[in-house]
Amino acid sequence: MEFSSKLLENAVYEMSQLPGIGKRTALRLVLHLLKQPEERTNLLSEALSKLRNDVNFCKRCNNISDTELCEICSNPKRDASLVCVVEDIRDVMAIENTSQYKGLYHVLGGKISPMEGIGPQDLNIAPLINRVKQGEVQELIFALSSTMEGDTTNFYIYKQLEGLEVTTSTIARGISVGDELEYADEVTLGRSILNRIPFESSIKAG
Amino acid sequence: MEFSSKLLENAVYEMSQLPGIGKRTALRLVLHLLKQPEERTNLLSEALSKLRNDVNFCKRCNNISDTELCEICSNPKRDASLVCVVEDIRDVMAIENTSQYKGLYHVLGGKISPMEGIGPQDLNIAPLINRVKQGEVQELIFALSSTMEGDTTNFYIYKQLEGLEVTTSTIARGISVGDELEYADEVTLGRSILNRIPFESSIKAG
Image 1 (tube, rainbow over the protein chains, first blue to last red):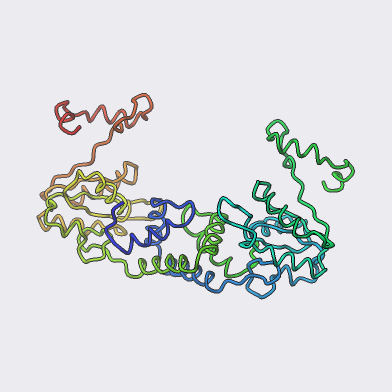
Image 2: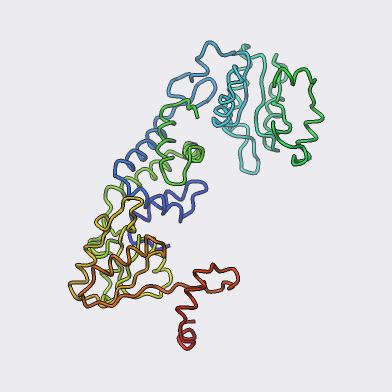
C-alpha cells in the first residue's frame, strides 16, 4: 500500500497494530476520522492516552477501577467470603450482568500458557493465595474458560492452596439453556450427564 | 454494559464511535492496549491527533499530502492533460497500484447523495470545473462507483462542463478478469456485451 502522506501512513500503521484490524480496515477508520470534526479524533486520542496513563487496578481483586478499591470490593453488601477467580475484567462484566452473584472477584489477567510464554509468575496468582491466607475467603469459584490453559491454571492454583482452609468449586458446564441436545458437542453433553443435578435444584434455579 | 471505571467507559465509548466497531469490539481493543506497553497507546494516540490536526490536502487534486502539491501532481512525468475523477483517496491508491495510469487525479471527497444530505456544494466539484477552465486538461475520466449516487455525480459534473473544451470518458465496466460468466450479475454482463471492444484491442491490453 503506497501512501501519499507520511502522517497518514503513520496513523494507519499504528491503527493496524490493534488485534483484528488489518491495513485496509485501519485506512477506512482513519479516513473516517478525517471526515469527522477534529474534536472527534481528539476525544478518542485523549480518552485512550488518559486511560493508559492513569489506569488503576483494584488493590484487592485487580479489577480496573478509578479508586483504590473497586466498587465491588468496597460494597459492604457483597459476600467477602466468596471469591470468583476469572481471567480478565470482561468476565467480571459478564458475571455481573447475570445479577446472580453476590460475592467478590479475583482477576488473574490471563491463563498459564507455556505456548505463549505465560507462567504463573506473570499472573496475579500470588496475591490470590495471600488473600486466602488472610482467612476471610471461604470458597473460591474457578470461572476460567474450560480449555487446556484454563484447566492448567485451575490446577496450579488448587495445588498452591494445599493446607489452607478454603473450599474450591468450578462453575457448571453443560448444555446452554434453550439449546437442542442434538446440536451440542459430545464433550459438553458428556460433562452435563456426568455432572447431573437433582431435579429439585433445577426447579429452584429455573 | 456496566464499567467499573469511568476512564475505561470513556475510552470504549470513543472507540465504538468508529464505523463497524461495536461496544464489545471496542472493549476488546481497549483492553488489548492496556496489556501492551504504554508507548503503544501513546504512539497511536499521537499519530491520530497529529494526522487530524496537521493534515494537508493537495491544493490541485485534493489528495492527502504532506506538501502543498501532492507527489503525483508535482511529478513532471505525469500527463497533466488527463485527469481521473475519483471519490476518495482510497480510489487513488487502488488505481496507482495498477501502475497503468500516468495522468493526474481529482478527489471529490464523496458522491452527491440527497439521502445523506450531500449536495454538489459539499464536494470538491467547483475546483474541478475551474481546473478544466484553465485549459490544460483535455480528458476527464470518471471513475466513481457505478451506483445511483455515482451516476448522478458524473452527470452533474458532465452538465457543468457544457461549453468547455474537454473530452469525458468513464472507466470500463464488465466481467472481472478471471471470472466465470455464469456467476456474473445480469447488469454487469449486459453492460459488458453492450460495451464490447474490438478483439484486436483486447490482445494489446492483455
